[in-house]
Image (cartoon, rainbow, N blue to C red; front, side, top):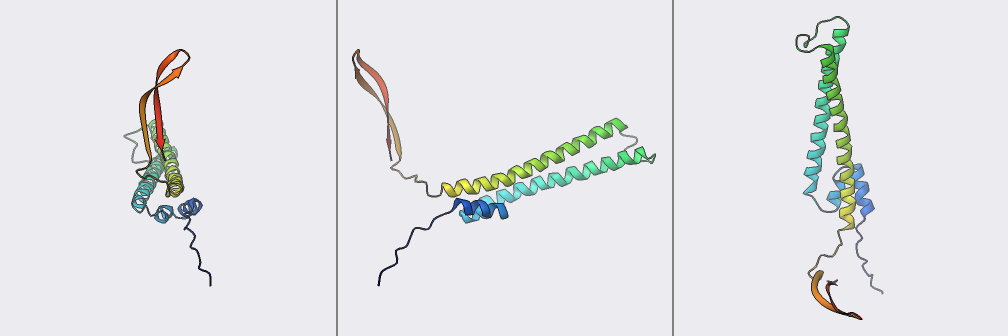
Length: 154
C-alpha cells in the first residue's frame, strides 16, 4: 500500500480577497491576523457614523429652508438668512459625500490588505537574508578606481 504524500497547504490570496469582499475582516481572519479586524470595524463604524450625522444635519437645515420657502416659521429664522442656510446645507451634503467615499476606501483597503497579506504569508524573512556593502577597488586600463560593492545573500 502506497503512502499518501501530504502536499503543502496552499494559502490562497484569492480566497482571502473574496472572504473580505463578502464580510469585511473575514480575509484577515483567514490570514490569522485577528488584530486587524477591530481596526476595520472601528473604521467602518466611524465613517458610517459620520455619514449618518452629516445626513441628519443636512436634512434638518434643508427642512428649515423648505419651511422658509413655504412661508412657515423655522428654528433658524433669527440666526441665518436664506443664503447662509444654503451654505450650511451644502457643507453637510459635501461632508456626507466625502464620508461615503471614505467608507468605500476603507472597504477596498480591507480587501487589498487581505490579498497582500495572503501573498506575503510565505515570504521568507529569515536571518540568512542579508545585504552588505563594502568599498572595493576595480582595475581599469586607466588604473585602479574605487567603487562600492553590494553583496546580497539569500
